[in-house]
Image (cartoon, rainbow over all chains, first blue to last red):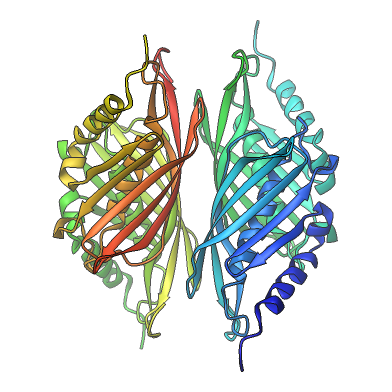
Amino acid sequence: MTEPPFPAVADAIRHTLEGQGFARLVGAKVIAIEPGVVVMALDRRPEVLQQAGLFHGGVIAYLVDNATTAAAATMIDRATRSVITAEYKLNLLAPSRGDRLTCRAEVVKPGRSLTVVEAKVHCRVDGAEKLVAVALATIANLDTRTPNA
Amino acid sequence: MTEPPFPAVADAIRHTLEGQGFARLVGAKVIAIEPGVVVMALDRRPEVLQQAGLFHGGVIAYLVDNATTAAAATMIDRATRSVITAEYKLNLLAPSRGDRLTCRAEVVKPGRSLTVVEAKVHCRVDGAEKLVAVALATIANLDTRTPNA
Amino acid sequence: MTEPPFPAVADAIRHTLEGQGFARLVGAKVIAIEPGVVVMALDRRPEVLQQAGLFHGGVIAYLVDNATTAAAATMIDRATRSVITAEYKLNLLAPSRGDRLTCRAEVVKPGRSLTVVEAKVHCRVDGAEKLVAVALATIANLDTRTPNA
Amino acid sequence: MTEPPFPAVADAIRHTLEGQGFARLVGAKVIAIEPGVVVMALDRRPEVLQQAGLFHGGVIAYLVDNATTAAAATMIDRATRSVITAEYKLNLLAPSRGDRLTCRAEVVKPGRSLTVVEAKVHCRVDGAEKLVAVALATIANLDTRTPNA
């Protein structure tokens, strides 16, 4: 069997992300998927803010979690593997004001059983992109041919 | 001025958490607040799940972020300080199935400028509590008397 | 084949730790090994301090790295698996003065492919143990029967 | 008073790093210091290896800890502030074989009270640089004018 072309992989990942109840609740969108890179974004709405009117830290974590896992998913053999977040660390750098939150996740090191992914989160403030968070994630690649992992 | 009694502090923290648009969207509740400890919980609803029917990782991060920050807030002098999440690391340990998610955050080390907080997240599965995530957070204590921090 | 008794496992782990050139350079000792728990300690010497006379952060990291990995090693099937540190996060909480540094690592969640381990590091100051660091680590369990992992 | 020129700042940082007993024990050298960036390196010797002949994880942590803290130190007002590691997360990506270990730390976000720094560690293997670790650190900037911080 040959590997499916990358657009088919990207469609499958996008479909998975959009099939999440929480994704629909939060309203995040996938902006770009390339091998090793996923970009997600979210527009400002009252429901995704905290008490001071900034994007909520939980929303930033949501984008980081999904984008890093999806970036790892672009690098695996989908016939035999699936991905799951093992852990991540998230540094919040600056108040996340602005009208749009964008998370870009990029694979630092693909691996057979673990993939390490970096993410940077920017807020668009008056048209300029400002770095508001940075993260480092470890994604586990499960062998879907074995009964449990 | 004497310090307010702890129940007043707890009420203020609870009020802050409940004033967040995202908190209302997600539907988390504060279960307990004591000096150095905050417990939050969330019941299962389709909107807080991912595609496999588990609680979404972003929901777990949301609980961890809020509960750890609130636990740090119980330890500061609220007349001169406010809290903000500097960073956290979250390990997802097991599939978060079940009907209720509970996060217990406990201060490991209070400090003048930084407070370190641990969190454990359990899922209630068939009446039993199962550990599904563990986190370690650093909360910054801002001096609200200075112009910017 | 039956599993070897735990004392034999502990001896093998101790032997591995003591076979490291860096372990001999730093001078750390294994104080206790039980299923899921490893305790290591290090006495004060000028060579393990930083410029202010505190135990160096790199020494604390060394103890955390070794003790967490060894704690994970107590939980695996050594006939088919070996352990390797995937990642850890380390919070330094207080100045590490005193005459002895002790790191206690304890498995939070054993797993087939990943083990999550917590560690706490204390300094003995005037006979009292003071918490100086806390860590959270992810240890990968490699399948030694496969050609590469 | 005017700020000292950057070469004087770099000399002061280099002097601090070289004044550490542990630095002399490990044998690390500062290769470069610029505003926001510090590079440190270490040559292969039996004493800095683990049992399989790889650079020890504790040595990698040592380089990460020192280089990230020094990178943060390049960005502060040294008349009123000093730096201390609050926490870091370190992902070990690949076996650290080779004859030289190099850690490059770069400030992601300078701040008044906290500085966030990324680090990448490479091993030189047969003349080629291979990425073996990546880290994300939070450095606290202490106000040295106040009695305790």
